[in-house]
Length: 271
Image (tube, rainbow, N blue to C red):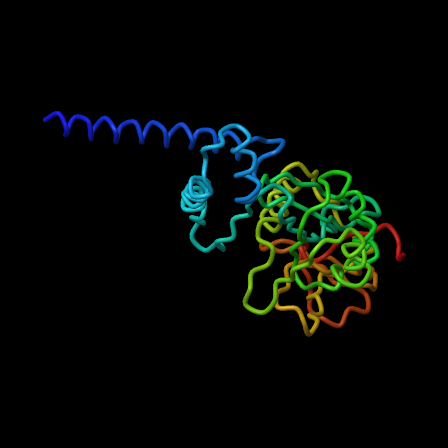
């Protein structure tokens, strides 16, 4: 009986000691200023508080942490960043449907760990504009280890050169891989909020100048079209036919059929 009690006591003491070490490791790892490091970094910080903590203790904690975190929602990928600013996901949105001034696009960058993000307005959708916007991203969020984006041309050339300047690794989504879905979700939320708070679209009358919604031209290296595009040419509304299904618009020199309101964007001039 005595040996059995001694064995239970010994097991209890080991459990208490393991819990004590685990709590130290947890406090070190979740420190918002110095934590979220890799195994060696966490071990070094934990041993500064308790020299008896072993590499195995830290590995067990991190393995358990990954098991809890690595349960993506159905349909999502399983990537779990190990620390803040390990990866920024970047995407570009066409905001011409809501734009009131020269800024028709928006570059969104989001930290996949903390979900902290920034959005930079752009006048043009090209690599040079995205490169200039990246300076503001760095000011707002800092310098990440990697950047993940789709394979659009706006994320090549000058943009890639800017990442090289900051020694940032670049990863593209290709083929069957998903787009940067975290940034994509952030863009969708922003568009919903803009749409909810936007005023009524300007009415279109005969004689008004409009651009027509067109399908974007897909480049050979792209695999998904997600943006709205508008015709470079500006047309004049020649006639409006009101029907039970809503108004139909007829344009001067327009070779296609009649158009509905969602296919048109009113502009102030032909520029």
